[in-house]
Image (tube, rainbow, N blue to C red; front, side):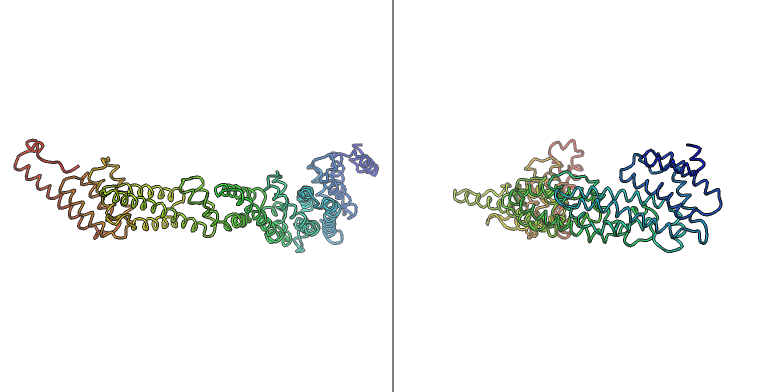
Length: 576
């Protein structure tokens, strides 16, 4: 048998056909026969006849590849090195003769016809049998994906077998490359006929996944991948190979018109139904948690099998249906909206609401307005509590204590809490900073009682810190002054504040009841930073005059008594 094969005799060919009919032909035997034939033709002068050569290429190359891709062969590889080299040598020799014996055009036409025949004979009938009926259309998706992956392999090998056509005949004739022809045929024969079924099946599968049904993301990615590639295939004639097609910048016209538009519409419809259901059954925090989960799932969906160009479009559609349409209802929900979350200081829920609505048109504006109203409401409650307290004292005939600092302490606590929230949870967003400022301006300039204004109460609060009544450490004094100056900035009548503050400062200096000169200077610097140098000129003059005066007093005392030790306890220490 080996001798018959090697000689390539007529008897050897008979034996080859006999074994092929019995299914006993193996890749090694087939490759030995091909190698013998290719070697014989390479060493002999003359052409390889078209029909003879094509028969070798078709039966030992193309048909073998088709049988393996269809799962009808035991081998996993269509060719070994000997087989591929022999087939390429045969096809090359058929086109290497100039003049009448150059079969390049015939091979090109037959290659195209063979690829078309495979699609018509194997792919179309099987997809027609599995067109979408019920059950999510997974059957047709699996078949479509299977044939698409097979077609990429088929075109790859066809290009490899007839690569010399791309380099010679096709380049000189300005016609489509083997790869371009293969994918154009898929576009015309398969994709154009089944694109609607594939799209609808994909959309059903996506909706099923949203409802919790497990789907194979690799299957969906394989099917979705076809749409952007088809846009490129329909227009490109110079594709070198399959990999160059997969790596090329896709043409999204087909993807957008045939898939994405319908996908976005179905997404909108799906979340329109879900949002109505969630509104009826869930609180605002629960609704937002469900929305956050849905948006995360959609982003994962894009990463797994949709084209990246759909990312922002898909999220915008989801946010429109889930957040934009109901932002006022969600934010201002009486039982579980933003005011409730602020009152209960629900950090996770507040953060989630901010992160979701920051991507929604005017979403943060609505949140900022509600935040302003909340701060105004909380501040007005404190003012009203002060009014009620003063009224009770008057009814009982008692005198109001001007040193009562409860309201200012509570306002400071409210401002500290809300400032921290704006910085840490709301990312120091300008709209929230402005809302906080406007709210506290309203509160601080609405007096709680007629006999003593908020301005005077804030001056008294600063006096308590600087006079040592609160018994604070050095760092605590500085922190308390920082908080006090934050409320100071909201006062509209700052001139009244500085006059009242000057009176209190004078009393502290003359009576020597102050925490430290350093603290006094620090507070003046803070006001100067807020209002400018002219605002604190008199205050700085008072402190400087006081400091200079005591400096000269101490120098005089040292001169008169000789030393500090002799003075004993008669000289008060006024510096830190």
